[in-house]
Image (spheres, helix red, strand yellow):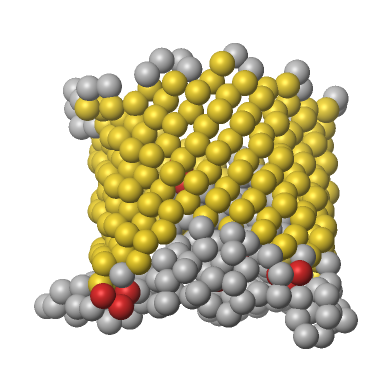
Length: 424
């Protein structure tokens, strides 16, 4: 038996023994994912960088409901690519011969407390949080802090305070993240929300897209309107950066997302448009900066220009961000959807075209073209015994002249993945 399984079994036994015999409810869920991948995402002309490998990931979440008000959660992960120790393996073979890898990652651990006789709950510890209503730009990651959620009249409130970096304990040189969101469901058709957030970087080092000694303020609004089988939605997010000691890092940016959705007889279809203006500042500060979560544009079933949501290891996609974060802005249009097929089979697809908002902004070197490219992607799969999910997915990127170099036009890219996914 591997060390990982021994550790997980031990944790589960300890949790059971530590809980009151007749009052605790313990659940174990998560997924096992095995993927065989072949890809080439190098756009340089006449450069063949095709790679192929197999990897696997196990994520397990233990939830111990002590009573109606208190829940304790631990969420762990272990990666073991075939024949490789794994990026987080600190001892043992990992995915190599003899295995016995030591390298469990802690994704989350927190305590949820539902305040008695109210709609409010408080969560303390490492938890997932971020800008999910805004295509996960800025941040959408696991972080350490405190969040609260509940109702204030007709408003559903979510608030959070998180510490991204603690430097010297006796100095104000940390990076703190504050977030407040209010959402209102007007009726069964209309919903809207407002967001305000601050990433305060008092550190002398940049972190997660925030410049050193700079306060980044974010203001957003989102909403949706649904009528029977059709719906429309949108979001608008503004960023205002203000240097604490200097105006050199001052900057502004915004992002607009629009959606149209429809429910079909056996599936769904969505059209998504995105616009981010180019950075025309002389200091390169009027733009959104890359964040480390790597989860942007994950809901359009893309694998090359958008984020591949099933990614374990290798390249995660997100080529559209080359333009957005590079100062060229971004304009994109995607169509995606899914269909239920007979005999527990299914089909998912996505297609998207992306281009710069300006190929020659003042803030950076002019690109040789404005066309990032076009992607087509699809996934077909079938579930056996309800949980044993086998699928094949692939994407092809027709790369545009934005990636052109002095060597000539860019190479097209592709990614093909055979996957086994078992959720539990």
